[in-house]
Length: 115
Image 1 (cartoon, rainbow, N blue to C red):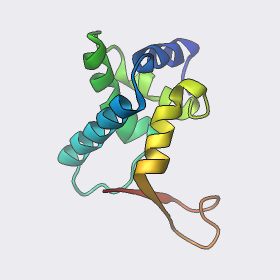
Image 2: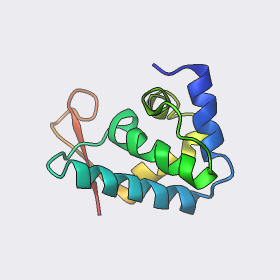
Image 3: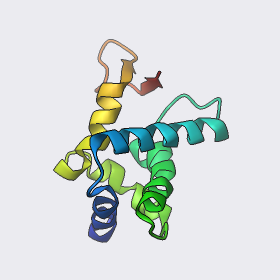
Image 4: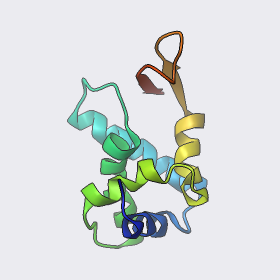
């Protein structure tokens, strides 16, 4: 679970960036994650994406990276916040969500396949 300070930090990193800029950074984050772990086919908001996106956002803003482990949790905890919309929309709109099982997504794991 993230702290209010972590959520505010991530909000600040996303603030002022267009949807297109966030999309490009998300794509780069997933590319970096894939280059480090090419056999991993699952993406978690607060894992793979958050871990790779925080440094890219900080670099884009010219800010020190900070505690990536603390900040990445905000990507999961704040998914429904308006300021997180560009990240959430990237995942939903630019990537295909493939759900396993007849009751998915409620009872099974998910896979995220980005083209």
